[in-house]
Image 1: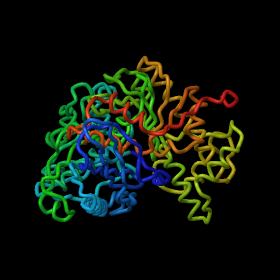
Image 2: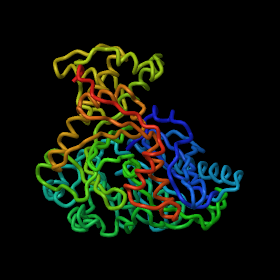
Image 3: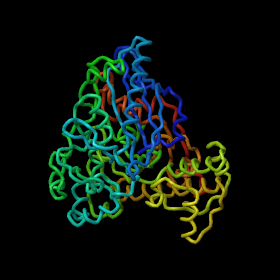
Image 4: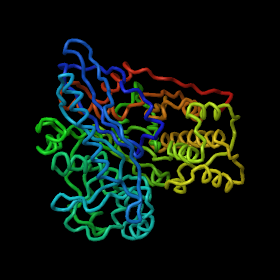
Length: 503
């Protein structure tokens, strides 16, 4: 779950990544976060005998956000899909002007949310957002049927009240419908093929972390239809080709492929972490913060469950061992409230003012569910500080510094826990996504962890999406180490070292 409003300041073109293959082939990435979305073209340049590059060009941007429909917080999926089609039309136009061929399309979005589709292929209602509070009441009934320890021992999934299984437990009459996660729902409307991409399936709470298959016994225990979810597909596999009517509408050939990528946006982002070290931690920093390690096998111990770590699938069958933490949603919501009140200081100036404040100020727990729903975020943060017995001034710089300090402290604690639980020692922390541009947050993270922090690339999610497509098409080769080496060698990265005076 990524892409705060602040992220959309990235340049349209990213750096070079080594490649081999003919010029003129491009790939389209549909990259949608909880706050905004983009359609991006990735161009693989140069011939087979020389190093190549991939350039990312954003051809369409659009806002995204929850809306109140029928008394609940939902996604306006009809509007969202219309923007996807506009983006693909723009991509087709740009490619045609440059005499290029769009080889395939890949889709990544946030996790856990889904739409219900009936036998006729119709969406029965606009999908609920994870920010709606409806699933809170389902947690206890689900746990009466499935003990939390048993759930974790199979799925390895971090407990969050909005996980898909709790959302599904609130539904009525699921006979005759299928639940398609948001990127799979987009792919279905483009191709007519119903599939569930594995990295996103692993966020549902109904996926076996060891077997890599649906945990059908959990579906049965909860009274959910056995075929509620579509068959699994892995990153790099073809979902289908564009439906003729869709191809005609967007101006692409009907044979254009939709290729599964790491459709959970964090899976795509982690695939493009430019790590040259074997033991690294990552922070995919955006609306949410995804903080953890990459492992070969899940950690399903009781200690891991008690620490609320998750084991989610990554590209090439890896395990993203992480905690889903609060993120820059806190700041973007504060900015929204301040703008409504007439305070419109730019983010750079706000962060500069926050950096000038002395360390040791009040902090909050950014993971508190109190901060999930949109509302007056500055006042909620100040109220949370008051409950700790401290006082936070009603000053945007002070509130911003509180958010940054709280996130950095949380990152450090999470990385230490991950090292202990996975029996790994981390040498460096990689920050990717929008938060990699936040110099204050990156420096505070280095200070709090006592480790080097390497920031960038900003567009890691789009890069991961494009690189998986390009590899599937045979235009680049290698496993994750090779792909990461290419990213590291071609992007300008920023290093932060701990400042001992601030530790």
